[in-house]
Amino acid sequence: MIRDQRPLRVLVVAPSRYALRQPHAGGLEAAVWDRVRWLRARGHDVTLCAADGSDFLGDTDEFRLPTPEWTRPEDASDTDYPSGYAAAVDAAFDAARDRLVADRHLFDVVDNHSLHPAPIRWSLEADIPVVTTLHTPPLEPLLEAAAEVRDSSHRFVAVSQATARAWSVEGVDAFVFPNGVDTEQWTRGDGGRSWVWSGRVVPEKAPHLAIEAAREAGAHIVLAGRIGDVDYFEQEIVPRLGAHARYVGPLRQPDLCRLVGSSAVALVTPMWEEPFGLVIVEALATGTPVAAFDIGGVSEVVAGIPGTTTVMPGDVVALAKAATQLAETGAREPLTRVWTRRATIRQHSLVQRYREVERVLAHSAQPVPARRMPAVSW
Image 1 (cartoon, rainbow, N blue to C red):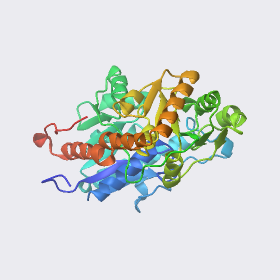
Image 2: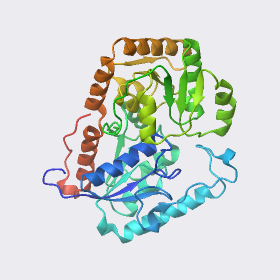
Image 3: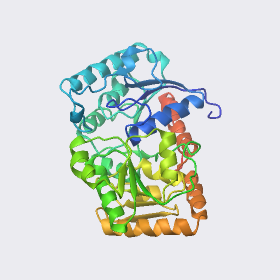
C-alpha cells in the first residue's frame, strides 16, 4: 500500500463489448482484468462496472452492462453492434451514473477504461475524480466528451507515447503509463521449433501476414486468439491453414503462456496504429523473441529489450528474415531467453507499472487544494 495513504475506494469501468474473463477477448480486457486483481491485492476497495458475465462483478445491477447478443454467430463483430445494443449500453451507463451519484460517498475515484464517452462525463455529472486510460487511437465520441470536462477533476493517461501524441493532436493531453503484465503468471518457457502468433483475429492485426512470413521462411506457425471478424477469418486465414499453419482458437492464460513459451519466435503484425501491443510483452516475458511490424507504440514496447526486431509494416519478406534470425539465435544461445525475460520484467512487470498508476489514482482522489503532481517515472 502507498505509505501514509488509506486504501482507495475505486470504481473501475471496463470496456463494455466483452465480459472481463478468460480467455480474454483482447489485450484491453486482459489489462483491465489484471488491474482489478492487482488493486484488490493491494488492499483497495474495488467495484467493477463491466459487461454481464465478467469476473469480479458484485450484486449491484446498476454497474452491470449488457453484452451484445447476435442472432447468428457469423455476424459477431468487433466493429459493429446488433440492433438495439447501443441504446441498451447508453441506458446502462445512465443507470450506473445515477447509482454513482446516489452513492458518491462510497467512492474516491473512477478508473475508466471504457470506449464509451459516458464515464468521462461523470467527473462533471457525479462530481468525482475520473482517470481515463486511452487504449486506442482517438475516437470522436470520446473527444467530444473530453472537451466538455476540461475544467473538471479529470485526468487522461495513455498507454504509449504514440497514443499520447495522437490524442494531443486532437486537443487531449495525457500522461504516459505503459501497460504491464503479470510476470508471475507469464513464466519463462524453453522455446521450441514452431513460430507463434496470438491476438484478436481481425484485419488490423493481420495474422494472415504472419502465416505468409512463416511460409516464406519454411517455418510452421501456430495462431491463437478470438475471431473478431468472421468474414476475414474465412477469407484470409482458413485458406492459408494446413501443413505450415494451425489455428488453435482462444486460450486461457496458462495455456497461452505454455504455447508462446514453447515457441521459437513470436510474430506481431499490426497494420494499424497499434496503441501498445500487450501480446509483445506477454511473449517477451516467456523469453520468446519477437519480430514485429514497427507501427504505433510497438517500438516503445520493445526498446531496450534483447531478442526483438522490428521491420516496416507489411514487409513479409523482412519479417520472415528477422524471425528466422531470432529463432536461430535462440536455438544457438539458449541464455538469450533468460536475458529477454529479465529485461521485460524490469520494464513491463505489473508491479512496476501499476504502482505508478496507483499513485495517480491516489493523487486524483485527493481534495483539490491537496493535489500536487505525484512523482512517477515513465
